[in-house]
Length: 171
Image (tube, rainbow, N blue to C red; front, side, top):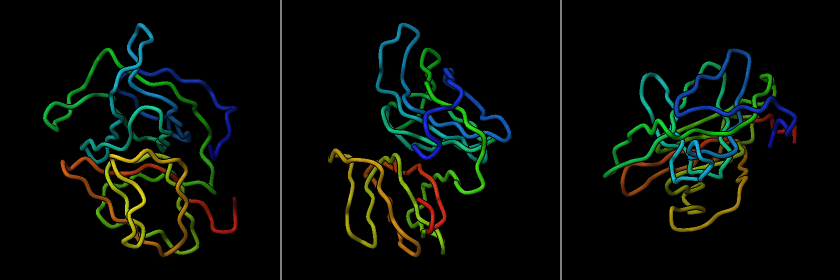
């Protein structure tokens, strides 16, 4: 966890917008009011569109002023679930850490940066080598260096990742 664990605890409903100057680290999602875990997925809203980035139990970082939704899917179509939510920690933004989310089929790690992937849906290939799929349990984080190309894909259009960029010379 790039920010540690000394953040402000947040329990949110199925829709939430991160305050300006803050970063939200979602620790788990899909919890109903009775405290029973569900199998909801985390969706981030960006430019009025939602996309899948994670399943419960994976850490998702959400940058300031971004909105998120928690829900399920039926035949690949998202539907919000009003009785679901998330738990997480809220931190002050940091100049050295940049939360990143992508559903691009090709993501290139910028020059001078490392990419730390903390969650994903679908397959990830690093420079055309498969490292993750929906069918394989994987350990996070996945760390890749500058100039590396990530290819994202899936059979049903649900693919994306969440993580952060950090300067190459920082740990």
